[in-house]
Length: 103
Image 1 (cartoon, rainbow, N blue to C red):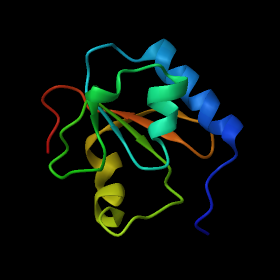
Image 2: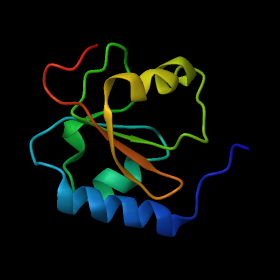
Image 3: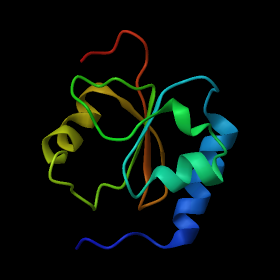
């Protein structure tokens, strides 16, 4: 299905991002997860890449795996090969890409 998760899951993910991610890092958020990092997480919006790029050019990625956008299904499938899952609440996943991890 292509339905967004309940807002309380976005809020919980965003508050976690605000508390546990480092400032000054690039946060990749999709259209539906921008709210998590930049509103609830209070991270500056200018730190974002608004879509998943390959090779991955971000420090943190905020993803809703249930929603596939035209440009991202392959990139979403490759995420866990190269980055570490550091948070999940059943609907929203936050990934961390350590320096040196490729691509």
